[in-house]
Image 1 (cartoon, rainbow, N blue to C red):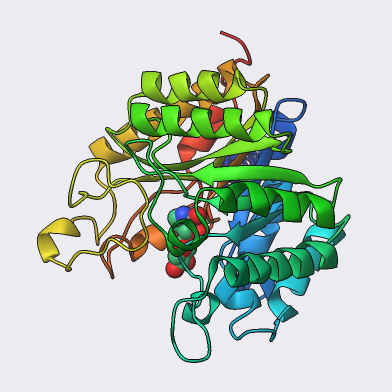
Image 2: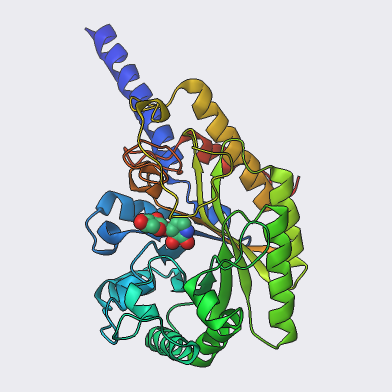
Amino acid sequence: MRKVVLILFSCLAAMLVFSYKNYKREIIPLKDIFKDKFYIGVALNTRKIWGRDTAALQIVNTHFNSVVAENCMKINALQPREGHFQFREADKFVDFGLRNNMFIIGHNLVWHSQAPDWFFKDHNGEEVSREVLIERMKKHITTVVSRYKGRVNGWDVVNEAVLDDGSWRKSKFYSIIGEDFIRLAFEFAHAADPMAELYYNDFSMAREGKRQGVVKMLRKLKAGGVKVTGVGMQGHLSLDYPKIADFEKSILAFSAEGVNVMITELDITVLPTPRRNMGADVNQNYAYKKEINPYTDGLPENVTKQLAQRYIDFFRLFLKHEDKISRVTLWGVTDADSWLNNWPVFGRKDYPLLFDRQYKAKPFVQMISQIPAKE
Ligand code: XIL
């Protein structure tokens, strides 16, 4: 009898030690690990902003000290019709950030995508003049930035204005106003909240052409006395693209222009991409095929390893340049949240984030937290 009790007791003790270890693994707060280095941020979708995903919110509060709204601060969400501003969700988002002591990012003020048609058209459906578009941009930026003055800490003022080859994206903002729309957007934002940090944000920033285009833009803005606090390098990465060395060149190049560098929108797709270096152009979509959705039943061991290594390599790079990097933001909490399940192909199953569909930190998160600060 005593033997049985002893065996049972040992089993119980072993189980307790095991679950404590696991518990420990879950609760290493990333924000403590990266404290004094950079903010570690995360994008919040509608479900989280409205408090309907409590398990994810717990992760957000444990691990992150910065938040950005995935969609609810884009022009189509805030001003779907001219003059009809809708702030309900954005207000909720900002309240969440303030309540939880987060560094709050507004995303975004000027972007060709998720901008409603009316923005560029008059009442007869004709394209508006330069003056009208500038006025609309001014009204939108001024209304939004003033509302959150002193509460939103930094704004993605202009998103994705430069193409991969360094030339200007031929967006409506560009074709109607000219490249001046960038300067104007920064000036309007600065006037509305002089204390807010102001950023330029773009994808495929590791590409030579884009790097040079963005550097040229920064120089022009600086020469014109325009305040730009930082550059956001959207981190929509894949397992084999881009090269770490190219990404590093861009961190160095932007930092040399005297701005903070931020890794925004970090996620690493493990799925086959329809073409090499997809970038993150939300308007490029491809048809679903079973062959390009290979991991519906879980991620094979070898791919899990590759993903882990890729995350570790990138975080090693971020830590190497922590003096230049002010924030690293993940584009979603768990794999279930990720926009990559639906872009560039709708209805796939991707595994791009730090937490899995069961809200568990992936094992490599532990490894990231053990990377020495300077190697
Ligand atoms: C994406 C969102 O994640 C999706 O939910 C939405 O349908 C499309 O936009 N670059 C950006 C982000 O700057 O705003 C985009 O977010 C992803 C690419």
